[in-house]
Structure formats: structure tokens, C-alpha cells
Image 1: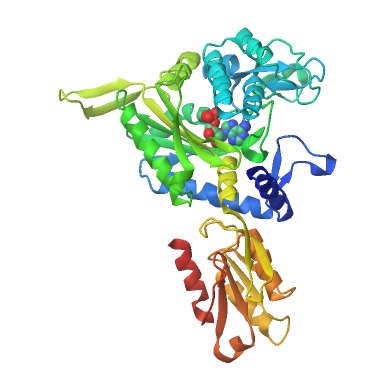
Image 2 (image 1 turned 60 degrees about the vertical axis):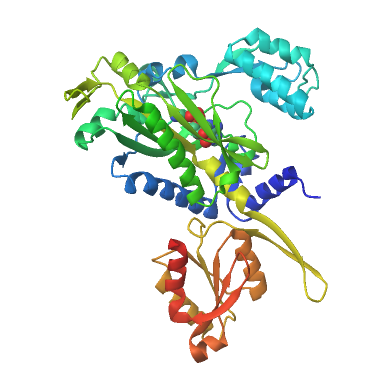
Length: 483
Ligand code: GAP
């Protein structure tokens, strides 16, 4: 019987087999927790990014997008608190020399217990993490005799904090070199550009700045495929608001983001909110939007009310004034005046969103045919508007003028949406391949096309086929994509 774990392993293999995702540097045996997106993966990722970008910058008049550099002045990360605080408690096994993130080690152990016992261990761990009690965490590991997966021993070091930022050198010669960091979040590129954008864009509060881009974290235990990577992509939006109005906007963005996930085909019952119990020192409210991945409910997106912490810190470290002059009138009829805006942040991982879409799309279908034999297919039911290829154009034969008609259709459609042309193999085999890569529509050009200018259109999800005029194909696909 197929278990969730098996299905997840099948999905990983499928992603590789059909050009969605490859292990990075596979030729050299791979680089752990780093992945490359193949020809279809890159297109699906772009479609998701475009949907997000459009929903933020095109559908909200008061949100603009930027593209800040990955490298930033090192003081940015001092000011943001990442140099001092962006760390996770780690523990090493002395026999295998393998390092573990303490929460992952304990979570892994809790999964081996029955629900009640597992929950009790997790509750104890949460309490110790909230209190920054590193010796307490070690005691918990020892009390439960949690073993290293490699050495199978309990010979542990003390628990230590380990900074997750990657550092490198900037400058052409060593003497000039200075240590800089690969950004662990894109948000700081927005904060340091707050005044630039507000002034040049003549933005009035409330307004947002959106950005998508790579972020890097030296995750020690990188697991679950593209769920936790060392190099990943974030889509973040900082919404700058009047102090005191942050909870109103926090609730607005909480609902708005959940609705957006539903708009790209994620069912409401696969999404839930998880309020943070322990708030970061800069936050006055925070929650995760969780998705039910094949390995359980996990964070897909974070919504954080970050107060005025980041702008205040950058003002302090740069010794520059970062404020907004608000000449709207308050309840007393006086201008609000100068203040440091508060920030509500929405932050979703593009790779996690990709995994969400793929987990929902991957379907192993089996049925009994009329003659009693078994049949089946693997199909990726990716919603048409985000599917990498929209239409496959398939001449039934490689002769009799059918490829010419097919290529004419391809030329007519390809500037409107992504098409794929194929003339090799039996038509059934070609349909199966299109199912496996998630192409929502296939059009077959056959001899009847030459007689009456009609084609067969086949719908991926229910395999329905119908005869339509060749001249209607483009219009029909475009209607389906916008519906
Ligand atoms: N600026 C806020 C921030 O970075 P976060 O909760 O650390 O908050 C936001 O990250 C989102 O980025 C997460 O909800 C997740 O989707 C994604 N993310 C974080 N670490 C990741 C990793 N190692 N691999 C893949 N995605 C990650």
C-alpha cells in the first residue's frame, strides 16, 4: 500500500525524471540541500513568482517592487540582529562527528513515539527553547536516550548556538578583503531602501515594497527535499503602516495571503494558521501559514508584525534619520507628523510553494478498463494557469501534411502561451507523457483536420476528448487560462 513517505519519494523521483528538479552538481555526487531547477521546474517556478509579483505590485496600487543586491554592507546584519542572534542550537555526536539541529533531532525522535508521548517531548522542548535553556535541551536528549542516526550512540557534546549566515570576502586582494554575508533574508534590502523608494515613488503610508530573490542559510540538518535548502528563494513584502494600526494590517494580510494561496489552487482545508507562542524580540505578533505536506503540517509562509524595529535599528547604526512625515490629520484634526513607520511583513518561500503545488498535483491513478484489464497513469494536475506548458500540439503522423498544419498552429499560439510540439511515438504514449509533465491541454491533428479543419482537444484531468474547429484552439486555451 502506498504510504505518504512512499508517495513523497515517488514525487522526488518524478521531479528528476521529467526535468523539474535535479540535485545540484549531481555529476560530482551532488551538494547536499542544494538543488537545480530543470527546464520544466524553472518555468513552473517563474509562473509562481509572476503570479505573486502580479498579485502584489499590479493588483495593489500602493505596493511597488524592487530588486536589491544579495551582497549588502556588513553593518546591515549587525543592525538587523542577524550577526548576534541568527543562530540555532546544535549538538554534535562525538562518535560520528555528525552535527544536528537540536529541534530536528528531538522532533525526529518524537515522531517515533505514540502521539501522546511525542507531544509531551515536543512540549518540553518548546519550553526549553523558549527559555534559551541549552543545558536543559541536552538533559532532555540524554533523558530520552536519543541516539545519533549514524553512530547509534548517545555520546553528545554540549548544545551550542551556531550562526546560520554564510560569509565570504569582498575585494580583489586579501589585504583589502572584508567579510560580507550572503543575505539570509531578502527583507533587509527593502528596509535599507525604505527612504529611496518612499521619496522617489512619492509613496504615502500605508504602502508596501515587494521583492523576490535568493536567500542563503547554512541549514545544518537539511531535509525533505526542497523544503529546507541552503540556497532558496523568498518572496517578501514589507507593508509600512502608521504606529498603532499594525494589528489591523496584520489581520488584513493574514486573510489576504490565505486567499491568494487558494487562488492558485491550494484547497482551504490544506492550509491553517499557526500563531507563534514565542515572539522574536522585534515582533508584536507572528504566525505561520502552514500547509499539509506529505510529511505533515509545516510552515509555508510567515506573517510578522515587526514593529518599528528594523527601521529604528538601521537609523541607529547608519546614524541617519529614517522617518516619514505624515500630513494626514489625526482624530484631533492635527497632522500625524514625523514618525518611524511600523511594518507588517509577508514572507513566503518560493521553493516551498513549488513543493506545495507539486505535492497536490502528483496523482497516481488506476482504473479497470472495459475488457477487465488494469490501466493507470501518473498525472501532474497542476492548475492550468501555473502549469509550465499549456498546450501540446501533436500531429497524429509525421507525414501527409499533418506536421505542417501543427506547426502553423504552434506559430499562431506560441506568443500567447507556452506550447510544446511532438511528433514522435504513438499518440497514447504522447498523451501519457504530457500527463506526467502536467500539460493541461493536448491537441491532435489528424487526417480529418485536412477535410473539415477540426482537431481533437484532450483535457488532462478527466482525459475527455472533443472535436473543435482548429481556428478555435487558441481562443479556447486562453479562455481556460484566464478562468
Ligand atoms: N524575513 C522573514 C523571514 O525570513 P522566515 O520564517 O525565516 O522569515 C520566511 O522565512 C519563509 O522563507 C518561510 O516561511 C519559508 O517558506 C522560507 N524558508 C525559510 N528557510 C528556508 C529554507 N532553508 N529552505 C527553503 N525555504 C525556506
